[in-house]
Length: 134
Image (tube, rainbow, N blue to C red; front, side, top):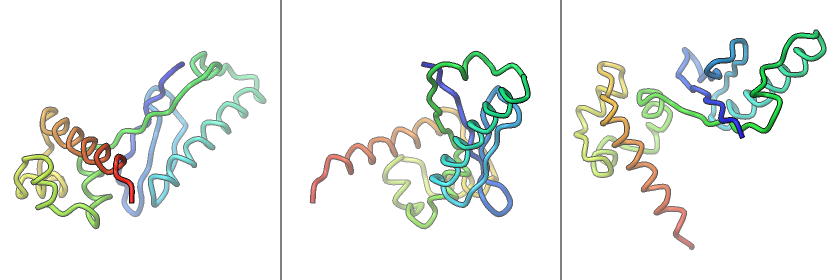
């Protein structure tokens, strides 16, 4: 199975997504769910239009594929700003609030190790929450 990497970024008034290595397939939306749905539709339209026009469809789109979505730290922090406080994120990640604020505002970009620290902390939280029954 081929893995397609979709990049989600903050745009002026919403979020946008594109597929790495495949020009012309883009999506916009206000929510991550909307972006994912729209990107899948855009990919279907791309394949269908390519076939109808006799254009070559990339080999990696002919078999099974999965779309994986990635966000940069700034977009992630901005998208979830009403859910995660900087104090809460500091407790989860060990990164101080001032530094997180700089990442969220785009004043500085995190080093790869810092981005991985945030990602791992959020995955741990997700695993913990998914193990709880009410």
